[in-house]
Length: 288
Image (cartoon, rainbow, N blue to C red):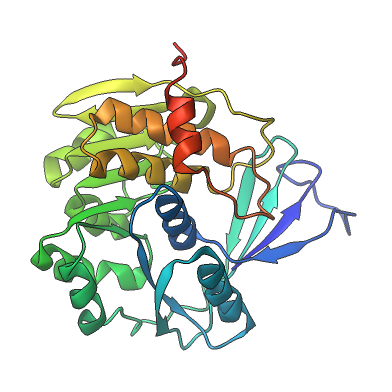
């Protein structure tokens, strides 16, 4: 559950108070946005998550009902996860995560995961503590796996289980001193077929079979207002292409298109690009 606050600038200088536009609360963290993204692109989708028996959890349930996304919930004893996202005028964001909701014993039960994995081709695994324990179950069922390491610095050991077990690895270059070095380390130590590092307005980097290539940005279809959800949209677009058997460069272009579209949508709305919109934009010329 995200509370969205539009602020006059980032970083935000200290002041006793600020007058800001309406503060909105809406469902939609990484798992929700990827589920919405791939479902809107026509992929059969089922989302598993831990949520609380609280008002915030009700909003998450309502989002899935409204979007027609099959949803299996596992009780989160600490309550539904929450965050505050500060969004600047240029669309950049700063996220403040409430880390008090998770508990050491939180798990996604194998008996819940196994039947769904048995009838699925692929699982996108969010970078949350309980999901790390689901990786062996998914691998045993033979589904391919993707994950998003977000702003990993390349050193924090928590991320390594995700990085090394996934067939597709997404991450941001935000905290990386040497993106190519980190990408090649993931490839050497794990099983990834493709590693994609997004770099905002600079595009993205794609590593496949030892070859590193640059993925150009795509002109957004409207003014950029908010970068929230852009990484999740990129992953959704890439997965759409990958599961259709497209070449990695084509998958990355789909991701860039979906990410650019997401930047035109305010965080207060949970809109994602449709299959028809993505394919129409993909048919246009690529930026050099």
